[in-house]
Amino acid sequence: MAIDDNGIAITTTHAAAAPDTVAARKQRWCDFLDMSRPPGHLFLIQYDPGVPARPQPWPENKRERIEWAWRQYERQMERLEWLHDDAIPYLDPYTGTEIFAAAFGCPVQRPADDMPFARPLISEASQVSGVRVPDLGVRPLADLFDIADELRRRGGPEALMKLVDIQSPMDIATLIWDKNRVYVALREAPEAVVELAARVRELLVTFLDEWFRRYGDEFIAHYPAYYMPKGITLSEDEVGAVSGDMFVKYYLPELAELSQRYGGIGMHCCANARHQWSNFGLIPNLRLLNLVQPNEVLRQAWSFFADRVPQMHSWSGDGPAWTWLAQYPPQARMVMEVPAQTRDEALECAQRLWKACGRA
Image (cartoon, rainbow, N blue to C red; front, side, top):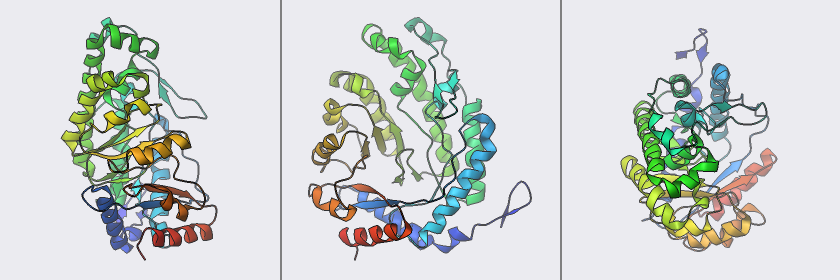
């Protein structure tokens, strides 16, 4: 039995009570992500009543963040016992988007009612040479390892860690470089933007190598919360602002390198980037795609990506959840996020979707 810093016993009986359930769910995700297998669907029931508000991800709230994440993990383990969907419990060292930009020295804005965000550090190409790659001992990153280490100590080696909020190197470069100037620089001084992104990539690789060394290759994605047996996940939110040719020249190489290094990549994109969809297909071993777009755009995505990549978008269909499957193209692989207002509604949705997905 583990003991916390206050000498209080840490309960781990939930993890011991349901290893087969967790293993079975992991296998369903592996089958779903394997494009060589017949297509199928997964579903996550969104029902978590009474969850306390998360402490803001500020440095001074480190202990509160740990306690909140641990309570959430215990709630998720208890949920395994009565709600049969495809959710897998995870330890959540949640962050904002600012962490890597902050590690480079960007000032951070911390609103009381919103997530923190980085403010730009540079505005001119001549300043790139002065941007140094930090080590993992800088506070934003060291704090994350402290939080994750404590959660792993409590949860044990079988507990999955959720990956922190990661953007692509080019996305992080546009946080470090004033966004009013960086896209002009991408036309007038592209070598400087590429140099900055390369320095970001160097830090990301150092961070990810250490993260996976400590917590293992399998994890829950940074957003949305899906299982990855290996690889990385990141957000690519700036590609709506560049042409397809610029994506291929400046964005695709770093995505390909990261995917090849870690064995696959899952990608979130909330940009208006319909013109990049065919280019997304050039990313090697793209494991899952998440788009946040208007419903009609997502309906187009269902068909466009049906036989190309598993999908998990911000909207999953019209009407009752168990009717959504009939709305998808035959070759599509969809993860459905299903809201439920009560425990009975959650149970009914899970029962009906279990049957609709061909498991009963």
